[in-house]
Amino acid sequence: MFDMSEMGKILEGMQENAENLKSELANKSYSVKTGGGLVELTVNGNGEVIDLAIDDTTLADKEMLQILLIGAINDANKMVQQNQQSSAMSMLSGMSNPFGGEK
Image 1 (spheres, rainbow, N blue to C red):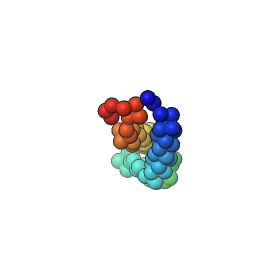
Image 2 (spheres, rainbow, N blue to C red):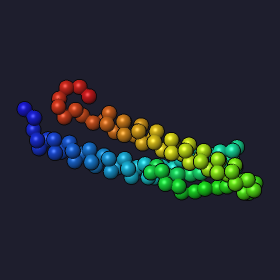
Image 3 (cartoon, rainbow, N blue to C red):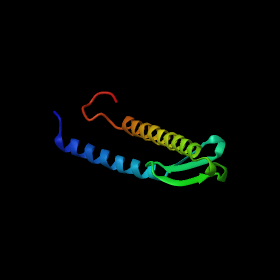
Image 4 (cartoon, helix red, strand yellow):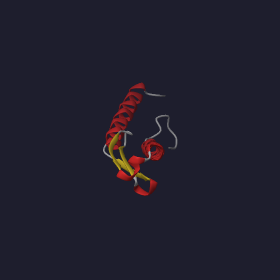
């Protein structure tokens, strides 16, 4: 028979794991370069921009700078999303099945 107190313990463990994962991700950083290094963007694991370096030569061409920034932001966001997904999957794979049977 299924034990509800056991389910509560499992849910508490899941919440704790999720909080640990969130903290872990916030401490990671990802850097991307576009335009051969003309723009370098660094974000943390939550997708927040923590650094941005723009080469002075791009300042004369607003359209090029916009394209480089958009590319850097999109690339950084993809990296963060992929890491969040793989981290969440590894967290879930380490959990036991509360309903019995195999993992």
